[in-house]
Structure formats: C-alpha cells, structure tokens
Image 1 (cartoon, helix red, strand yellow):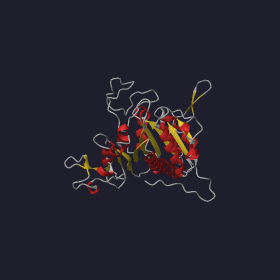
Image 2: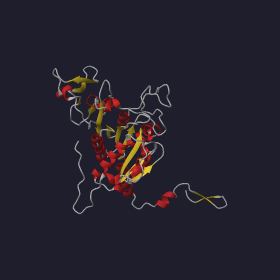
Image 3: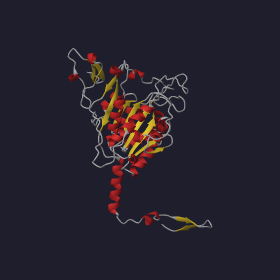
Image 4: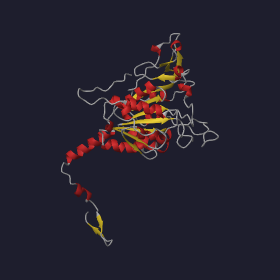
Length: 359
C-alpha cells in the first residue's frame, strides 16, 4: 500500500503534523503498553487525511483503550461501557461531515457492547472502529475477556477459562462490515497503512489490532510478533496477489485442498509456485474466503494481517438523509406544532385536572 500525503494549496495554512493531534494530557497507560504504539499511529495518520482538527471526533467506552480521546487534540467523547458505537452512530447520523472514530477494547466492544458494535457495522455507519485486542481485561487487573483463549488462567478463571473465544474478524464479517482488517501494535508501518485505508473507506471500517498488555497478559501474541517467527507466522494480505508467506529461501503459500476445499499450506518447489496459489480478493461479495483467512493461526497456519474485505455500499447516514429529503419534498410546508398536537394530547392543570386539548 502506498501512503499518500495531503496536498496543500498555495496560501493555505501549514499542513498539520502528528504532534498537532497530541493533547497536553499526561498519558497514564502502563509503561510499555501497546496502546502507545496505536496512539502514535493514529496521530501519524490523521494529518495525512488533510482535514482540520475540529473535523475529527474520537469516541470511546470504558477500559484502558478508552482513555484515547483524552490524548488526542480533537473533539472527543468518553462514553459509558460498550456504548461508544451507539454514541458515534447518533453523532455521525446528525453530523455526516465529521470524521468519527470509535476506540474500544475486546472487553468493552465484544462483551457489554457487543450488541451496539454489531449493529453499527450492520447499518454500515461511516465509522472507523478500532478494536484493541489484548485478550484480557487490563483496567480491572486481569480477568478473562471474550477473546481469551480456552484454558487461560486469570483472576476470574483460576483453573482456566472454559469459554470459546470470539474471533473479532469473523464477527465483523458476519455483521456485514464493509471494511474489515487486522494489524499489530508493533508493526508500525503496517498499522499506519491499515489505519489510513480504514480512514479512506466510506462505511463501517473495522480494524482489529493485536495489542500487548505487558502487565496482565504479556506476550499474548509472541507466536506472531517475535522477530525469529514473523516471516513464517504472518501472512500479509495484498489485494490481487497470491497468498504467500515465509522466508525468501523457504516460501510457502495457501491453496484450496482437493476434495474438501479447505485451505492448506504448501511449500514452493516440485511444481508449486505462485501460480498454484489462491489470490486475495478483498472486494469479493462472498466473504467466505475472508472468513476462513480470519480463522488462521499458528502453529498450523500463519495469522493473516491486512485488509480482509473492502466493498462499497450506501452508508446508514446516506439512507437516513435521503429519507429526510424525500419527506421534506413531499411536505415542504409541514407544521411541527400541528404534528405534535396530533392525536390524543392532554394537559395537566394546576389543580391536577386533565384537560383534553387535541385529538
């Protein structure tokens, strides 16, 4: 992916920089937290969109990640637990001109806020939704979250959790999100490129970000991110290109297995090269392959990162405002007072009696 930069017209104000989007608030995440890398990536991407600071709104719920609005010098809203998508949907529907970002965690977004999250994506509201996934409740000191793996021993599951974890990519695809992607906090360039793609997408853009919690779940993604395994444990999705991964001298790829059609890993050689492999199509209307890619994980498969799906359909706010315009044209001189007094309307007198004034 190529990262474009905003174009400045002659005489226009100087382009904004990443530091222009940082607030003067003291960042109070734990030292070494992956949230810092994500904050830096977002601050680096915002200037590239060529917008004013007041065009951005960052909305969050509850959790470590949800302190995000304090640290951005934009408009922001720190909401209640799990309700960030609902707040953001109302804001975007009433002010479609704003660039609205939702920041949530795996606990906030997938547990108490799960219902709000899936419906924001179902409606295709033009929101950029960043889900920080560290597979733990960090703010409340280490309980199992909806993405904690089976057997995970935490403060709330001392014998190991017995619940099957959510797969956020699969959930977003099932909710009909029109842009679905995954990146990793420590992959600086990839994370910025992915966030920029999400920002440029018109519709519900969901980005899962693997993020380390070095206090309560340290090393949650070491099987992907340690330098000695990155080449073999990561499959970077690129639209139109074969599904290839591995070291240069030991390239591997993915193809459909004869018979059951499941994805299988094959090594280059003995007649197998890039032409033998599947190609990634992020614009496919059928999300079947994206769903399968979202479930890949070590040690049997590489974990896929990048854009799984990017399709264009009308947004929620486009439909809402289209409906409003139609209604206004049908009744351009509508009387609001008459509308409010239509039907059975009652007024309570000072003495408590009810006086019928309409209907």
